[in-house]
Image (cartoon, rainbow over the protein chains, first blue to last red):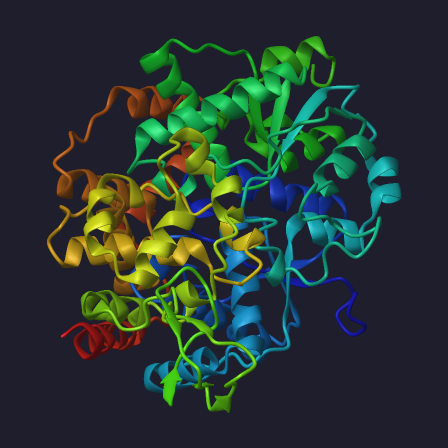
Length: 309
Length: 239
């Protein structure tokens, strides 16, 4: 934790959290408030370019993320930026990596910022995923204490996807021993939800790909990949797949439906943002967490488990 | 005395009594020389190299040691055995355009999962090479514009125009451009399941975003600056 900021971070929600991932935004805010944490949205943030814009021009994504980091640092005086979205998080980490290892790209960013009349990013901000922020500034013990409702042994497959862990070279702080996050077998979400009373199941598809950027542009492939993930979670005995990325979440939801219609694949498994599960464990109201907006309605399961009334 | 260039390998052999290799006189110590196996100058490579340079991939293929780690972890290789990043990197650096063209229906399918980038011992970033090859195949007219390329362009235009991407616009513009119907069964089912629980407040906010696309207020001319950066690079390197 930085000394002068008392656990506060600049919040970078990203485009998806203004759209289909509104429940992720709502549940993130609810959980953060309950835990007594503080965050302030980056003034006038821009899109990170996801996995698409880099294919149009190589330095564009570095610039877009650099712009957000620079606003947080120079105009809002933060040295930590937190995003709950894997795509945003990955691009922030990549911008950090590029600025320190690729002088040519750093120079291009400076030139572009000058032309656009915007602050240039030159390093010095730490990017965090929401999972990392919770682990660093709250810790498992406080989550355990705060889980007054608890998840009552709900069987959860934790799905991290690609962008939270890969490539390892942009995550120098990971893989540093048992207390740090692993890029090969990530466990922060498992740890947090287990502390909240869930029973995380061993899940081979933790970091499998859902088809992400090709969700709409190569639908057959995405449906196949999602079906494999859903099957994997079923075989692991999970009742719920917990997600920590809006793209993974909507891709699982949408291609679950497409698989139903195209291949007849059926599953009872529910897909929920990990923040929704955490909020329920804290005893927050499902409506407040946007649980009813999920395309897979978990109400019946949660009642049966006596997690909600 | 003949000056030979080479380090061994399965090329053509030369036998000489006296020889200088890379400036070193090695006469007498051995006398069997091999030509290099890697083709250094290939006239066909020119157009491809321009592309690799444009996407900052200029040196990447040459760092590849052909270990095959990328292919062994590849998400798409598991789906389709002919999807083979290691092979395509070999084709790219030896300028085997014919064989690349034969693979035009596969290369674009890379889902950017970063597994290859993660494991590559030579820091080659095979994902970037595949994206570049896919661009090259389209630019040279060997392949129609692929659906992900249309999606990428549409996405970029969304961001360029006001700094943020609005999902509704992205979806409708992309479907229009690729000639797909705006109403698709599976997406309608998805929309229905989400809408049934959507609070009015959220619905209105999403509608406002779609209609007004507020975007980034201080975006100003940033989009134009970034677009001209893309255009200049394209003009310089690709003519």
